[in-house]
Length: 253
Image (cartoon, rainbow, N blue to C red; front, top):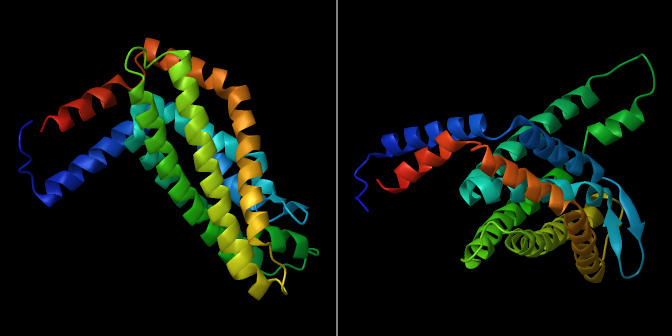
């Protein structure tokens, strides 16, 4: 491999060019579903669906599986770096959306009682903080695990078994970390301060993470055949071939 003597400016320009090519390469439907799922997951996390002595679940569990399925599809075809880039993009769009929601919630209106609207769309800063940190950390781990596990299937890396194992294992671990980090940040550190003593216990956080990971793993098992067919279709149709060739040449520099 040739040594890389490019300047920082050259490398930055190369990264920008690569991102532009990636955004053109990935089919818009997958990117759209991914971004929408991240935005919805942040909103749904405001509601606790179930709270018992040993378990607690928030509304984000209803859609977070879709985020991870999209990441698995992108990682399989384009690689972990591409999936990480789209993850960061989705997080930035989510933050922008939350800002717009917040601005809308604080603008006064005499047309009616919008307290419920303002409470939901105005958001809570520590929920946004917790969800952002948790999702970024879990996504990076999920994408790398997915890639590493896929590489371990050297005989048939594109087969159904390889796809199943890379998605099942990475999703379970990624979802557990996402749920646990979010629960700890929001319901142990901040909720007791800002929600009049309301909180979850460490056991509830752990069980929420475990139960959520199992539930989302089941979702992954149900929908992974769709993800597998999408990746095979992309492979047959050479989706994103220009991007894949570009990153291949970049690795040789």
